[in-house]
Length: 387
Ligand SMILES: NC(=O)c1ccc[n+]([C@@H]2O[C@H](COP(=O)([O-])OP(=O)(O)OC[C@H]3O[C@@H](n4cnc5c(N)ncnc54)[C@H](O)[C@@H]3O)[C@@H](O)[C@H]2O)c1
Ligand SMILES: O=C(O)CC[C@@H](O)C(=O)O
Figure 1 (tube, rainbow, N blue to C red):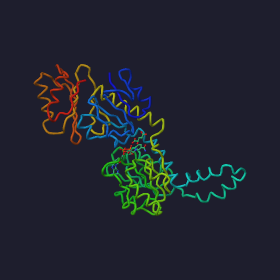
Figure 2: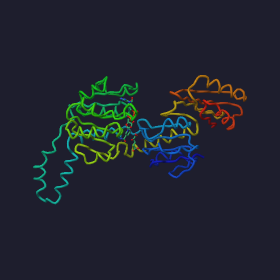
Figure 3: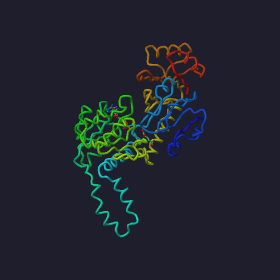
Figure 4: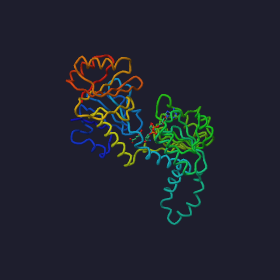
């Protein structure tokens, strides 16, 4: 039996994947796994029972990754599972940023009660809500991952000229990107050329407040900026000043803060990027499958803190899964300890990722939980699990 604690509302489609051997819910105690969306886990005490966390979504800045790695907790996300939902909202955001739809709708509401005059008043007043078309304009996409690529391709098909910037572009991503996307070598190239800029990078110490007074000064006058990635990518005071000065024509954000609300030029969306039934189901399904395969088989797919390692299961063997430091001699130390205990290694996979490594061994012989505990006494072995 496994316990899965849900820190946010998770689609039942995903929870149903766990089956009878799992108890899932908000009040579950001593969880082996946690399912989370946007809840911050930074202040949370991680229970000693915890083996894995799955983020049903893309961004993992709400999870203390270093702390998890040190505690031998594998953290997953669900790459691409909500990308289409975000892409669709970004396209809506481009149009909202351009066409003064939101103030127009608000103004139209004020005509309530004017009776037969409404038609005439609409025609008289509409000129204050003129806004440009997006077709033929230049869009800069910063971050060409699952979402950035879909946005770039959709904008292209709406007639925009698209510039893309991503110094870490993966080969898969490059294959998916429309060939007409202009490859910007620097952020300055995006800033200097684009009428619209959309952010699709993770929030990291490198990207925090990348949009600030200095970067805004390099942009075109009346640029429109969209942020469906994370609020802290943009310096709030600097963007509000640029909006007040007219340098930035509008700022569409999925991450409103108090000071943003009601400010002229800000279009604030309440973090709705991934809020579609399709995306919530996709994320929950992928997250549940990742947790199940890890808990039951020790396989890792889509981890953000440990290497991806998977091996088919052979019921003839006992599986031993080891999270350890990526330092010389650890594998031979493990092999030596097993040999001393008369255990034979039948199959093995091992990979490293930065400071950590993960090894799956299929063994024959009497390898018990006590043997695992003894192994964990070594300084460089973080967690040993026998499945
Ligand atoms: N609004 C929402 O509801 C919502 C939903 C999903 C994701 N997000 C946010 O959007 C981000 C992107 O999501 P994704 O699914 O496309 O993730 P992804 O990992 O597929 O793509 C991120 C891309 O950013 C690139 N990148 C990293 N650092 C960069 C830098 N300094 N400059 C330029 N590119 C850089 C990476 O190479 C990668 O290609 C997430 O990290 C998350 O914060 C928001
Ligand atoms: O769960 C959500 O609604 C938002 C998810 C989103 O911010 C993400 O990073 O995937």
